[in-house]
Length: 327
Image 1 (tube, rainbow, N blue to C red):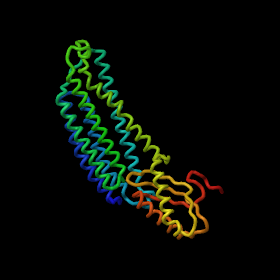
Image 2: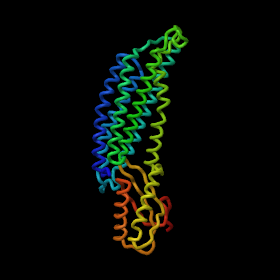
Image 3: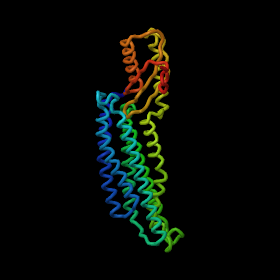
Image 4: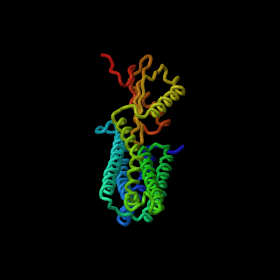
């Protein structure tokens, strides 16, 4: 079985993130250079997203180290929620790029429709650049997923970055395909007449279509991370896996406890590379504080072996998590 210790997850994250960082920096510089040469707006958007991805990878690499620090008196719940904050603000940044891209290119299209003035950009170089970006981005996505598989998918950071790499790869693929299609449109058609030539604004139209197609991903991620940070049950599949693991533990070791235990409620929330688990358990008979702590420790070890890194809160109570105990 692959190693899913916190140290192993951190090493996998560092390998992926630094490779991603330097590659994105190179693509950003290349994208801005292609834009300066061809004036294709879509390549400028590609360059901006690459630059954001590079900055995000740098922040994520530092954050991965900070969030891995153990809980202490100042941070008794640990620092795992930092990775949720990162995913939230990263998605907000991508959404901001999409909004800026829409506003900028809507203005360009309207200006052309009103003034009739425009110029056809050089599509050939842009098409070659975007084709290269597609191959590189999907290679980076594969690398993130490979490193994450090596730790049983325990890294939320690598999941986010794999999605970001896929998103940029799809943007580049859409730009490349569209540029090629536009480049082969013959002159003198109703799309390329003297009064209206779609080639003059084709790159802006491409950006607008791509923004419309891609805006859903960051919006969904923003909602998910906001729900996680606000304590909502945002990970039902994770809840189910925790309940299944608890049932398996009860079946294997229930007779060793010497009393009947009842799971009253369970909540599992993805916190970066770990899972925050909150349990409410009722029991028959009586237990000393030492016995309760021993049961907590055994439950922690059993759950950790089944679902990976976690922080466990186990409260002995007949009330569910949301209930207020009667006085």
